[in-house]
Length: 235
Image 1 (cartoon, rainbow, N blue to C red):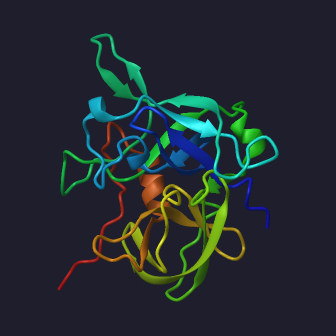
Image 2 (cartoon, rainbow, N blue to C red):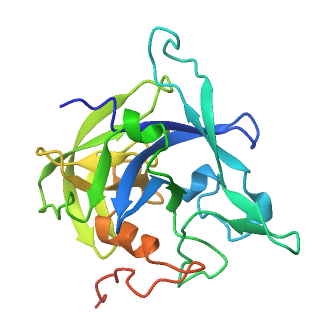
Image 3 (cartoon, rainbow, N blue to C red):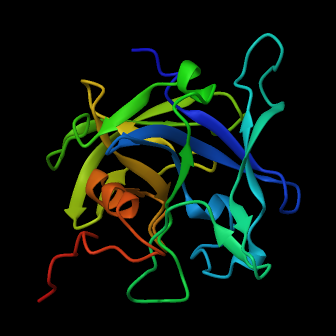
C-alpha cells in the first residue's frame, strides 16, 4: 500500500521554533476537511479554549523528496485557523469540541475545512467517513502512519489494540513526536482512528481518537456536539 500520499506533513511556524506533526484528509457529509490535533495549534498537553494563544495558521510542508531531503522542510501552503469578527475577535475557522470535564479546554482534534479544488485533494488520499472506517477488535494489529523522527519523512509502525473505550482506543507500543494527527489504518487500509499522543505517565502505549469522535466534531457547532462518544461507566 502507498502510504506516502496518506499522511500530510504539517507545521505551525508561529510558535517558537515551530511545532510539527501529521494530518490527513476526510470527506464527511459532502464537506472536506484537513484533520489534525489541536495541540498543533496550541502546543499544550490539554489545548486551551483561549484562541489568543494559538498560532495563526497550519502550514502544509513538502514531503521528503529530491528537493527536500530528510531532516529539512519547505512550507508550500498555509491554511488559516481563524477569521476576524466584526468586533475584532478571533473566530475559529475549524471544527472543534469543548471538553465536558474541562470547559476551558478543547479535545485534541480539529477539522479545518478545505475546498474540493484544494491542491491537497490531488496529492493525498481522502478518507470517506464513516464508510471507509472500521471498529477494530482487541489484539488486532493496525498501522500508525506519521511524520516523525526526520520530519517530514514518513514513518510507519505496527501496533496492537489493547483497550477500546468510548472515543479512545489505546495502542501498544508508544508513538513518537510527529505522529500526532496521523491516521491509523487496518490491513485493508480502512481508517481506525487518529493518533493524538500517549497516556499520562505511560510511555509504553499510545492513544487514538475513534472515527465516531471525529464524526462528532464534524457535527459540532461552536464546540458543542450531541454525538460525542461516552466512556464506559466505571464501577
